[in-house]
Length: 375
Image (tube, rainbow, N blue to C red; front, side, top):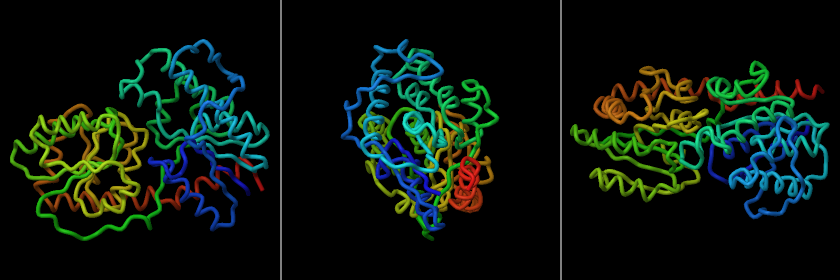
């Protein structure tokens, strides 16, 4: 079977989806399946000119809005690039972004298209202060879910919580399959080590949705209580300067290291002790599974896919979002009790190996592909 994996970002771009799909390709090709990756290069902007028509709603009602117009132009660019680069058929197309899915179905209407919805773009924009909840941009993006249901042959998503989130936007939410992300265990090499001072690490894009302002306030409380630590922040983004200023304001600058973007943080993570990320929303939160496979204790917020990965008090700790005191108390537990921290990390590693293995994803995707296009 010949399958096209249609991405939005190129595989070398940061992010759980882009980094995971090449490993899926490698595993399928070892099984004798043909699989190619396709994405829109950053240099392709403003090329497409074709009209865009959706089946379930009239997008022109939202035209004149900068975000919507940019989205539609990106759709046109994806059409232009696909026409230019893809000139042979595939048995199945598996898309990982709404634009990729809708364009592929438009250009290859007779080819089964599966679409994995990995995250809520509109929720991220709201949390990052880019659009208003209930505003025209939000309405436009929510209508895309119904368009995806109408156009694609199989919708998939990465967590039960995210399926519940999009359920009001589709006619048949029960038909959406949930396949949590999986990870190639060979990429992760836990390392035995002893750190005199507890080393905390977080890995994310530096945007408001990730809740790093809450993390810094929690760390200030942790320090006030007399608990030594070092916080390592891997990632970059538009609020880096703001976070650095907040660290200075909270008298934390000597306790925090800002690294910027790193291509393979999993090579770095095993030498730390605790992974913490107080996201305000998260469809899945791939980095938690990755940190668990590095044998780190997990501390996260009780939102979205994070809450499906962490059983509070068993393989990690969950706290409410927007609550720096609760986060500080959770961090205090793992900072002051190495045995408790070790047991959480061990349980997290066990669950991640069993539930979030790449082999499990391959097995589930094989069933989806065979159902879409029986041999």
